[in-house]
Length: 362
Image (tube, rainbow, N blue to C red; front, side, top):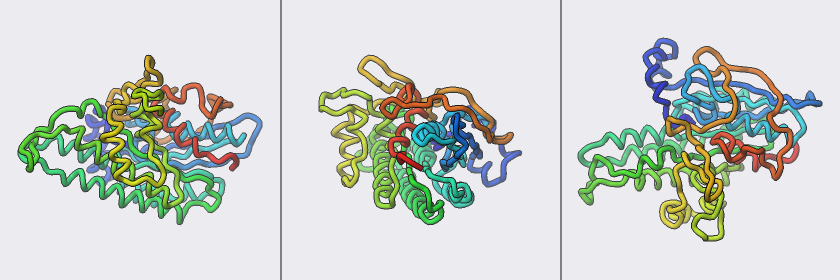
C-alpha cells in the first residue's frame, strides 16, 4: 500500500506530470508493475501468485524507477515454491500512491486478466493506506476547531472498496485459485503521532492527542478488512499485529505481544478496538523498533517512516519500465515454516504472514 509517497518522490512530481496521464499526475500516483519467477531447480512446472495494491506490495523504496525485488508478494512466492516444489511466478500489479478506489478500479478490475490465468493459485491484495494517510495529513494541518470528517470518509471508502475487491476477485479469479488473502494496515509514524493536534475539539475546547484519534480509526479499518475477509472466503494477514507487537511477552499476560494484538475470527468490532486502543495499548510499539526479544530489535520501516524495509537488491519498476525475470530462490527449505530472516525486515514479515495460509499443494 503506498501509504504515503516518499519525500524524494514528491520532489519529482512536476516531472511526473509530464510523463504520466493527467489523472495519475493529479493523484500523485505511479504504476509499479513487475513479474518475478522463483525458478526452482529440477522442475519446469510453474504456478502464479497475483498481488494487487499500492506501494507496499510494489516494494516502493523511494525511487520512481526501481522497487525492491523481494517485496512481500515475492517473499511469499518463495515460500510457495518451497512448499510445492515448483516454479512460482509472482505478479505484482501495483500503483504507488493510489487510494483504495484507484487500486480497485485501475488494478483489480482493469487488470483482472492476471488472476484469470489458468496457472493462478493465489490472489492477494492490500489497499486503504493512502486513504488513511491522506486523511491524517489533512487533519494534522488543521487549526481552529477540529474536523473529523476526513478520517470518517477514509474509513467509509476503505470498507466500500475492500468489500468490492473481494466480491470482484471471487467472481473473476480463475476457478482453480486455492488461496485469497487481504493484508491489513500497519501504523506508520506511530511514535511521531504521540503529540497534540493544532486544532481543538469542539466539545472540550482542548487539543487532542493525534495518536488517540488515528489509532481507533485504523483499528476499525483493520477489523473491517479481517471480518469481511472471514465472511467472503478470504484470509487476513494481520500486518498491524505483525509490525506493532513484539515477538515476546512484554507485559506478562502469557501471550506473545504480536499474537495478543491479532484479529480473532468472529470477535466483535468493539472487542477488537478495545483490545488495541485500551487493554493492550501498552504493548503497541513503533515498527521502527520491532522487538524480536527483550534485548534485540529490527527496523521494519524505511527512512521515510512509512514503507517496509527489505532484503536484497532492486529491479526496474516505475517510470522507465517494469521487470519480467526469474532467479533461483534465496532459500529452498524453511525450518518451522520460516526463512532465516522472516522477522528481520518489514517485507519479509508481511510475506511470511501471507505464507501462513498457503495450501500444502497447488
